Image (tube, rainbow, N blue to C red):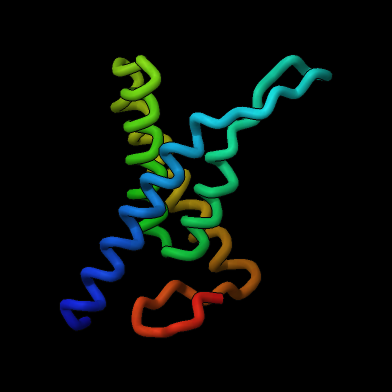
Length: 112
């Protein structure tokens, strides 16, 4: 992999991590169950499916670690990092066993 491709992939992963982190602070209130739905979850699943298992694990682990830190729950950072990073890895691995979805490639112009 060329250096420009590595830089592009690193920047893409960093952008997805920040996008998922900040979108996790947006909630939709569900009146029937009196609960909340986070917008960060669909963005996380999209990043895990597009970027691959290891990048998905990194994005989701960093997302929850940063979200816990920014929302005032620093004692949950280690547990959230371990659990959600494994979830990011598993989402992509399970999808790979099912229907075909191409991996993200920094060298191609089409991403889907």
